Image (tube, rainbow, N blue to C red):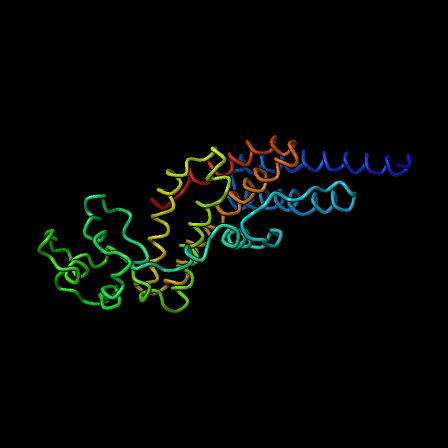
Length: 282
């Protein structure tokens, strides 16, 4: 290798190290910034720097190594609103995840004992949900107690009306937004760094996400005035978390081929933890 080429590669490596340091610094500043909007901008800038500019620099310099495998090839994230959530959904939701179950979701506030009647329904019981009352239907038997072995499955769905949401409740633009929230929550929980990183308690995060997903589905099912605007607020809240999780996920996956990125992980973890700590939906 010529001295000129060696010198060029050395300069590229030095610049790459400086960019990694800058990206880690941006994540640390984002974690401590009091303005959530500004924190999101700083976090997104760090993601673009580490996941786009740095990768292109290394590739052009001839030093790039294969990217750590992800479930589905996806575009590089950008700073546009919603891109991080879309990227996580593309990477971490399977065809099974994207199928709306029967029911789509049950009220997360129900205790294990209270959910038992709905657990009687299996994969062969979709017909019951196809004829179950919709969210806005008037159901006189709603709220009545369910007696095991005596209350029929048809009657269970009537008495537990408003404790579950059906796919038939999620029509129109409101339903589309609610499904985006539902799938986005699943993608966040399925992210490799959440499953395998050990930085964020997955069970605690699921407990924070479930009320948000439920709220979105109920807003869509109710179809009340201003529901779409309120759903967009919910989606924005989830997008904030998704951007921070994607930053952390990229660092976690890429550190196997670039150990220097590990130094930026604590700052990215703090960003995720700060967002979850201030989570307004309980």
